[in-house]
Image 1 (tube, rainbow, N blue to C red):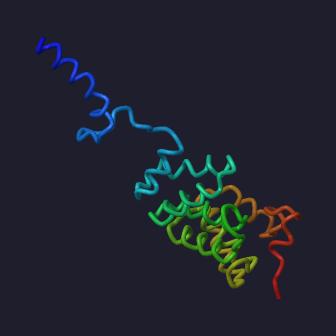
Image 2 (image 1 turned 60 degrees about the vertical axis):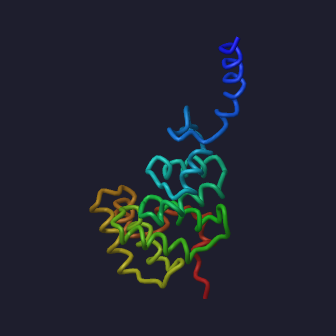
Image 3 (image 1 turned 90 degrees about the vertical axis):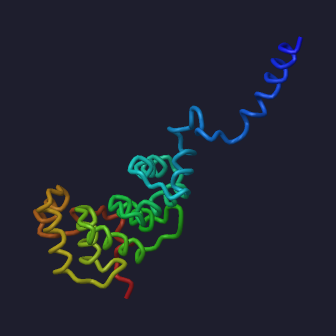
Length: 179
């Protein structure tokens, strides 16, 4: 009888015990969801796989989450996230259109040695978009990106640095001088 009562007491207490924090960790944690990625990011865990999820968020139209992810990852030093932050700023995704911030992110990526960052920063300098215009410095950065093997940089070189080669005319309004 005592054994049966003990067994019943243990069984009825199990759900309450299961709901508390387990000192040994969480069984079957949610590992592969956007919710988990955001939890990691918000806890300052900027693993490459979490940072790469920002791409899926952007392409899925979840720009606020993508911006939060890329911001954290860029601040942690991931140069690829810096170029994505530039993209977000330059297209007003998850925030206002901000060419100055876009150029600053491209500069940081270039300074970190990122080929895409070098190319983008070079193009920004050549256009004077979000940064003071300096065509020669811009061409030098495009040349560095081409030496790094970036095909679009080689394409721009081959077009004698004609920016129409890489930008559709639909974007002319964006890159027109403001003065």
